[in-house]
Length: 218
Image (tube, rainbow, N blue to C red):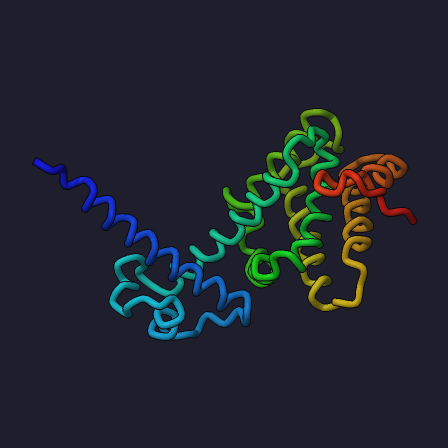
C-alpha cells in the first residue's frame, strides 16, 4: 500500500513556497520604502498567493515584516560566512566585514536597504549578523586582540558603525565605498584597541575574493 508521506511532503513544500513568497514580498517592500502600512491584500498580490494563505503562516503584518527582517539579516550573515571563511584573525574579520558590506550595497542592494532601515532593532539579536559579530568580538577579546570590554558594548559600537556605513553608501553614491569602508574599519579596529599602525595594515589586507588584487593604498 502506498505511503502517504509523499503527499504530506508535497503539502509541506507548497506551504514552504507560499511562506517564502510572502517573506520575499515583505522584504521587497522594506527595501523599496520601509513602509509597512501595505494591506495584506497588496502583500498577497505581490507574493502571487491567495489572500487567505496569509493567515496560514502569519498572525499579523507585524509578524511577517519581523520574519522578513530576520530572513534578510540571516542571508546577509550567510554571505559573510561564504566570503570570509578561512580568516582566523578576529581583527581582520571585523575589517573585512565592513568592506564586504560596502560592496553589498551594489551587489545586494535589497539586503543593504533592509539593514539600513531595520537593522538597529536587531543589533543585539541572537541571529543573523549580530550572532556572527558577537562571535568574532568574543574571539578577539579572548585572544587579547581587543581591549577588554563588555561584548555587548563593543557590539553596539560595531553595529552602529555598520549601520552608518549602510546609510552613507546610499546617501552618497558618488563616494568611493571601498575606501570609506577601509577608513571606517581602521577606526573601529583602533576603537577596539588594535594599535594604530596595525589597524591601518589590517584594514587594507586583500579580501579573500580579491586576493589577487593589490590592497588599496593611501
